[in-house]
Length: 169
Image 1 (tube, helix red, strand yellow):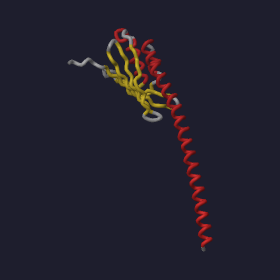
Image 2 (tube, helix red, strand yellow):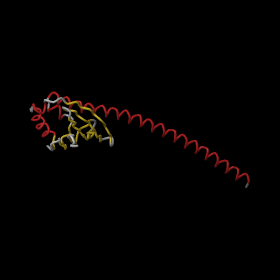
Image 3 (tube, rainbow, N blue to C red):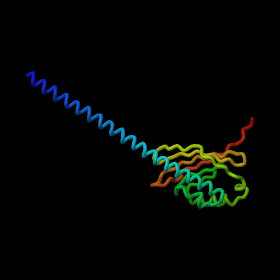
Protein backbone atom coordinates (compact mmCIF):
# COMPACT_ATOMS: atom_id res chain seq x y z
CA UNK A 1 0.00 0.00 0.00
CA UNK A 2 2.88 2.26 0.76
CA UNK A 3 4.36 1.84 -2.73
CA UNK A 4 0.95 2.55 -4.28
CA UNK A 5 0.77 5.81 -2.33
CA UNK A 6 4.26 6.73 -3.52
CA UNK A 7 3.33 6.02 -7.13
CA UNK A 8 0.11 7.99 -6.82
CA UNK A 9 1.83 10.91 -5.09
CA UNK A 10 4.66 10.81 -7.62
CA UNK A 11 2.19 10.71 -10.51
CA UNK A 12 0.14 13.55 -9.06
CA UNK A 13 3.26 15.65 -8.47
CA UNK A 14 4.58 15.07 -11.98
CA UNK A 15 1.16 15.89 -13.42
CA UNK A 16 0.88 19.07 -11.38
CA UNK A 17 4.41 20.09 -12.47
CA UNK A 18 3.36 19.52 -16.06
CA UNK A 19 0.19 21.50 -15.41
CA UNK A 20 2.19 24.34 -13.84
CA UNK A 21 4.57 24.38 -16.80
CA UNK A 22 1.60 24.34 -19.17
CA UNK A 23 -0.07 27.19 -17.28
CA UNK A 24 3.12 29.25 -17.40
CA UNK A 25 3.57 28.59 -21.12
CA UNK A 26 -0.05 29.45 -21.84
CA UNK A 27 0.22 32.59 -19.69
CA UNK A 28 3.39 33.77 -21.42
CA UNK A 29 1.91 32.98 -24.82
CA UNK A 30 -1.21 34.97 -24.01
CA UNK A 31 0.94 37.91 -22.89
CA UNK A 32 2.81 37.83 -26.20
CA UNK A 33 -0.46 37.68 -28.11
CA UNK A 34 -1.87 40.53 -25.99
CA UNK A 35 1.17 42.76 -26.60
CA UNK A 36 1.12 41.91 -30.30
CA UNK A 37 -2.57 42.90 -30.41
CA UNK A 38 -1.78 46.14 -28.56
CA UNK A 39 0.98 46.87 -31.03
CA UNK A 40 -1.40 46.18 -33.93
CA UNK A 41 -4.09 48.36 -32.32
CA UNK A 42 -1.57 51.20 -31.90
CA UNK A 43 -0.61 50.91 -35.57
CA UNK A 44 -4.30 50.92 -36.56
CA UNK A 45 -4.97 53.80 -34.18
CA UNK A 46 -2.20 55.89 -35.73
CA UNK A 47 -3.49 55.10 -39.23
CA UNK A 48 -7.04 56.02 -38.17
CA UNK A 49 -5.81 59.23 -36.55
CA UNK A 50 -3.96 60.13 -39.77
CA UNK A 51 -7.08 59.51 -41.88
CA UNK A 52 -9.16 61.74 -39.60
CA UNK A 53 -6.59 64.54 -39.68
CA UNK A 54 -6.57 64.30 -43.49
CA UNK A 55 -10.36 64.60 -43.58
CA UNK A 56 -10.24 67.72 -41.41
CA UNK A 57 -7.45 69.16 -43.57
CA UNK A 58 -9.60 68.63 -46.67
CA UNK A 59 -12.50 70.45 -44.99
CA UNK A 60 -10.24 73.36 -44.04
CA UNK A 61 -8.79 73.50 -47.57
CA UNK A 62 -12.33 73.53 -48.94
CA UNK A 63 -13.11 76.64 -46.88
CA UNK A 64 -9.99 78.39 -48.18
CA UNK A 65 -10.75 77.48 -51.80
CA UNK A 66 -14.55 77.74 -51.55
CA UNK A 67 -14.90 74.16 -52.79
CA UNK A 68 -18.19 72.70 -51.55
CA UNK A 69 -17.54 69.31 -53.19
CA UNK A 70 -14.28 68.93 -51.27
CA UNK A 71 -15.92 70.20 -48.06
CA UNK A 72 -18.50 67.41 -48.03
CA UNK A 73 -16.24 64.64 -49.35
CA UNK A 74 -15.72 63.06 -45.92
CA UNK A 75 -19.32 63.26 -44.73
CA UNK A 76 -21.58 60.25 -44.62
CA UNK A 77 -24.73 60.32 -46.78
CA UNK A 78 -26.98 61.03 -43.79
CA UNK A 79 -25.65 63.46 -41.23
CA UNK A 80 -26.51 65.83 -38.43
CA UNK A 81 -24.75 69.15 -39.18
CA UNK A 82 -25.57 72.29 -37.22
CA UNK A 83 -23.73 75.60 -37.39
CA UNK A 84 -23.50 78.28 -34.72
CA UNK A 85 -26.65 80.06 -35.94
CA UNK A 86 -28.76 76.90 -35.87
CA UNK A 87 -28.87 75.92 -39.56
CA UNK A 88 -29.45 72.17 -39.71
CA UNK A 89 -28.45 69.87 -42.57
CA UNK A 90 -29.44 66.20 -42.59
CA UNK A 91 -27.81 64.95 -45.80
CA UNK A 92 -24.47 65.42 -47.54
CA UNK A 93 -26.38 66.67 -50.60
CA UNK A 94 -28.13 69.41 -48.58
CA UNK A 95 -24.86 70.37 -46.90
CA UNK A 96 -23.14 70.73 -50.26
CA UNK A 97 -25.93 73.01 -51.50
CA UNK A 98 -25.77 75.08 -48.31
CA UNK A 99 -21.97 75.40 -48.38
CA UNK A 100 -22.07 76.40 -52.05
CA UNK A 101 -24.32 79.28 -50.96
CA UNK A 102 -22.10 80.17 -47.95
CA UNK A 103 -18.90 80.05 -50.02
CA UNK A 104 -20.47 82.62 -52.35
CA UNK A 105 -20.94 85.15 -49.53
CA UNK A 106 -17.91 87.43 -49.43
CA UNK A 107 -18.92 88.79 -46.03
CA UNK A 108 -18.67 85.28 -44.56
CA UNK A 109 -15.57 84.24 -46.48
CA UNK A 110 -13.50 87.42 -46.03
CA UNK A 111 -12.07 86.42 -42.64
CA UNK A 112 -9.06 84.18 -42.35
CA UNK A 113 -9.74 80.99 -40.43
CA UNK A 114 -6.95 79.43 -38.39
CA UNK A 115 -7.92 75.84 -37.56
CA UNK A 116 -6.52 73.92 -34.60
CA UNK A 117 -7.41 70.32 -33.78
CA UNK A 118 -7.49 70.04 -30.02
CA UNK A 119 -8.30 66.41 -29.41
CA UNK A 120 -9.28 63.14 -31.05
CA UNK A 121 -10.90 60.62 -28.73
CA UNK A 122 -11.64 57.12 -29.97
CA UNK A 123 -14.83 55.89 -28.33
CA UNK A 124 -14.48 52.52 -30.07
CA UNK A 125 -12.83 51.03 -33.15
CA UNK A 126 -15.56 52.63 -35.27
CA UNK A 127 -16.33 55.93 -33.49
CA UNK A 128 -14.07 58.94 -32.94
CA UNK A 129 -14.93 62.34 -31.48
CA UNK A 130 -12.89 65.34 -32.64
CA UNK A 131 -12.78 68.69 -30.85
CA UNK A 132 -11.28 71.57 -32.80
CA UNK A 133 -11.12 75.31 -32.72
CA UNK A 134 -11.06 77.87 -35.53
CA UNK A 135 -9.84 81.35 -34.77
CA UNK A 136 -11.56 83.82 -37.03
CA UNK A 137 -11.01 87.56 -36.65
CA UNK A 138 -10.47 87.15 -32.93
CA UNK A 139 -13.59 85.03 -32.46
CA UNK A 140 -13.39 81.40 -31.38
CA UNK A 141 -15.46 78.86 -33.31
CA UNK A 142 -15.60 75.43 -31.72
CA UNK A 143 -16.25 72.30 -33.78
CA UNK A 144 -17.37 68.95 -32.47
CA UNK A 145 -17.31 66.19 -35.07
CA UNK A 146 -18.26 62.56 -34.70
CA UNK A 147 -16.58 60.25 -37.18
CA UNK A 148 -17.84 56.75 -37.95
CA UNK A 149 -15.69 54.15 -39.69
CA UNK A 150 -17.60 52.87 -42.73
CA UNK A 151 -15.60 49.96 -44.07
CA UNK A 152 -12.05 51.34 -44.25
CA UNK A 153 -13.04 55.02 -44.44
CA UNK A 154 -13.80 57.48 -41.66
CA UNK A 155 -16.94 59.52 -42.37
CA UNK A 156 -18.34 62.47 -40.48
CA UNK A 157 -21.85 61.68 -39.22
CA UNK A 158 -22.26 64.61 -36.83
CA UNK A 159 -20.77 68.10 -36.91
CA UNK A 160 -21.79 70.88 -34.57
CA UNK A 161 -20.22 74.32 -34.38
CA UNK A 162 -20.57 76.97 -31.73
CA UNK A 163 -19.16 80.45 -31.45
CA UNK A 164 -17.78 81.95 -28.29
CA UNK A 165 -19.35 85.31 -27.56
CA UNK A 166 -17.71 87.95 -25.37
CA UNK A 167 -19.12 87.87 -21.87
CA UNK A 168 -20.37 91.07 -20.28
CA UNK A 169 -18.52 91.80 -17.07
